[in-house]
Image 1 (cartoon, rainbow, N blue to C red):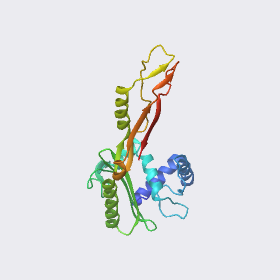
Image 2: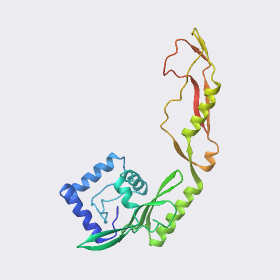
Image 3: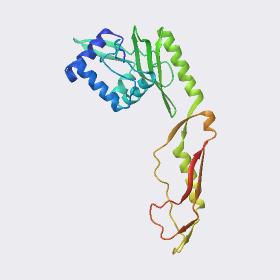
Image 4: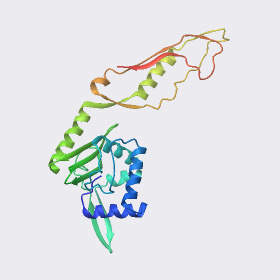
Amino acid sequence: MDCYYVHGNDSAVALAEYVSGGIEEFANLMNKKAEEIGLKNTHFVTPHGLDEEEHYTTAFELALITNYALNIKEFAQIVKTKSYTIIINNQPKNINNTNELLGYLQGVYGVKTGFTNGANRCLVTAVKRENMDIICVVLGADTKKDRTRDSIKLIEYAFSKYKMIDLKFMLEDEFDNIEEMAQFDIVKGKNNNLKIELEKNNVSLYPASKEEALKVRVESELKKELIAPVYKQDEVRKNHDKNR
């Protein structure tokens, strides 16, 4: 949102004019995209994020914006790059990422620093450790040291208190047990042989506190008595849920 260097702000304006013809037109595109991804408390006026009364967002919606942007391959590659060398007038120039946590704190792979007089020091950080991804947003810090310290505290807190539960693994493990014990009585049927399959489950990893994770259970109960005819895609479960 906020660009620290003046030439970065100039570049944002140049890009806005190239893409849509002007700053206002580009802001309209930004607001349209914000609406598309479900933002309710964000409004853009400029492409660079310098202080404007009607240019605003929230920490939560900055996280949503970041989550959306990280799915763009080029964006994800840029924000995780610590330094890059470009050529200007046949002369090499090294550009360094201003994100102080990149390459310093375990698992950090972006995303953005920021500063304006109105916003103070800001930092959006993306971190991945094992199978858990988080986005941390710190706004309004008085100094760079403050935003760094607060970001590290929040990140370490999240990883110390939360974990990802692999629901897909738990469901499949439970299904293997059911499949081994599955015996049916099919009334009016020619035989009692059924091949059962677990329905496709789109939910895999689920975040929970470490205390909650200890309480998660998957339980299933089959209908033992079925009445013929039994068709493909018929449900044979009586109950299948996760309890806490």
